[in-house]
Length: 257
Image 1 (cartoon, one colour):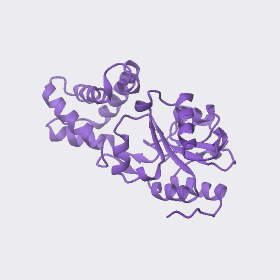
Image 2 (image 1 turned 30 degrees about the vertical axis):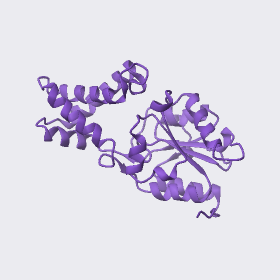
Image 3 (image 1 turned 120 degrees about the vertical axis):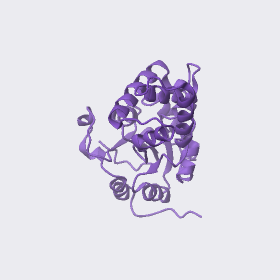
Image 4 (image 1 turned 90 degrees about the vertical axis):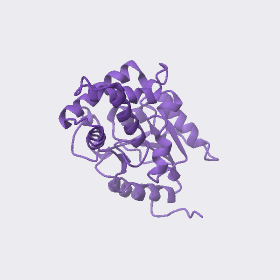
């Protein structure tokens, strides 16, 4: 259940929480540009299975195995397109990978969910320290800048840069340390709250760290273990979250120059 103590630190996941992408659209568009049509249904399944396999073989986008995030994603693209075009040349796959990796480092492939700016503005005006905790690679800083939301966050903590990913307790402890660097008074775990779309990585990752947590579900699809989350901790839009914070933080805003 959401902690009713006034939060002084609020952190966000990014993908599926603040920013969305139309994976099929971008992969199909860039594939077609290079003469490789791709079937949407097969694409989704291929992407999922390859993501799971690569994540096991090279965790945290190859951070500790020597592969590195760029080659990790290059392997992903190669595998996804090779699943439907077994005889395609490596040169063509490299060109597609270059295009997709570049696109996914900008706002061309990322879009803000409705209510993102309003929520962040509302929290900032109420003197809440805002941060990001994301299982992401080194492109996240540029993505947040290109989508015009980087300025709201005191820190951006990625699994790739830190070397540990959610739901590890260590990454939440590091986020709390970074949040404390912005305050003269120490922020306790119970005064911190994390918002994300994954039950395991976000909701229970934060709860296990002693934080408050909220699960954002922009769509009606349910995850297998969503039933373990109290209904009052599940929000279906960022606007609903904004209203929640207005209730628990009050109407008073801190003036900022």
